[in-house]
Amino acid sequence: MTFGHDEHHWIPESDLEGMSLDTLAVRAGQIRTGQLEHSDAIFPTSSFVYGSAAQAAARFGGEEAGNIYSRFTNPTVQAFEGRIAAMEGGEKAVATASGMSAILATCMSLLQAGDHVVCSRGVFGTTNVLFQKYMARFGVETTFVSVTDMEGWKAAVRPETRMLFLETPSNPLCEVADMAGLSALAKASDALLVVDNCFCTPVLQRPLEQGADLVIHSATKYLDGQGRCVGGVVVGPARYLDEIYGFIRSAGPTMSPFNAWVFQKGLETLPIRMRAHCDNALELARWLEQQSAVTNVFYAGLESHPQHELAKRQQSGFGGIVSFELAGGRAHAWRFIDATRMISITANLGDVKTTITHPATTTHGRLSPEDKEKAGITEGLIRLSVGIEAIDDLKADLQRGFQALNELIDQ
Image: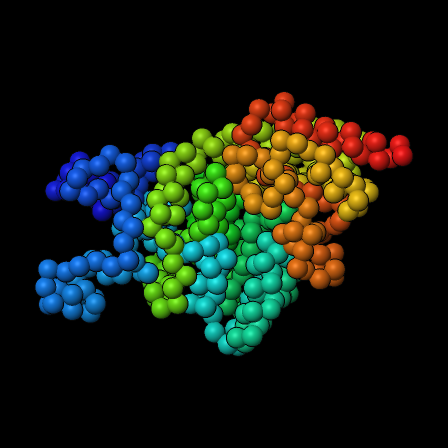
């Protein structure tokens, strides 16, 4: 059940099937109490009471549905899970304390010692560390491949491969994976295809419809959209999500009710925000291509991008992340970043405020020099998460960076 007019009139999930994503973002997953509140309620409670000892026993024994303890049952968290599941077209969702805990919960629930993972090199640096360092301690081996090299994916698969993991578009070079091709490979290999959909969100891309088995989000990014809370979520079929839910119940990397409420409210404006991000990012990417100090611009919306046509087929928009490269390495990249005045120097992304960072020393700073080179993370690379400010103001602030480079060269 999702939303209704009073406590006795609830509209079933089946009635949501014909609704557009814009409507699902506002209406799906809503839970109203007997007070008939219009906005979503928050349930900041650690536990729930029962009418009798027998009812408590029935709840704990699974004989009766209902809330028990907010580590694993909370109405606010369930409302957020219902909404994002509806938007992604998934059967079920499980919310977690962070995007990384969503990845960890997925791996700990669905992998075991002796299993093998094939992972794209173009992932968030901490995702790389999780697989390469920590999952290895539990006997799970990972092979890293280029997200766009289908032959490399095929060559990396082994009999013990149980998961293909990727981000598309990738972080931070905006490379685009062929999800249909990878889905076919995963199915032929008896492996799961797990897609981090953080950059696109369900507004621009729905991986489950393109053959993915599971979708993961750092809700911290676009799902919130205003840099307020940390959280994550996994979406997919109940047969996998039930296992992940069991891990969350036992291990406790749980989303708080307050954060779930913030994310649920964030989803209401996600469609209109993503369109604004896309518009600004495309114009800014085209403008950056024209700057003489820029050697490369990485954005799938550009006709020059090698996977531009694939992105057009898989996505309804190209997202808000634009990366670009300067020839002068770290010295020029830092000089450029430090010259900006309005844009926020922070490694977070997906915010209505534009952010700028140097991936080689922040988001991917823990990678070895060899792994950075393989992933294309150069010292001259800068990543922008383009917000929804006026485009002319963004260009003016970035122009300060180019001016600072000109002054450096003239010295």
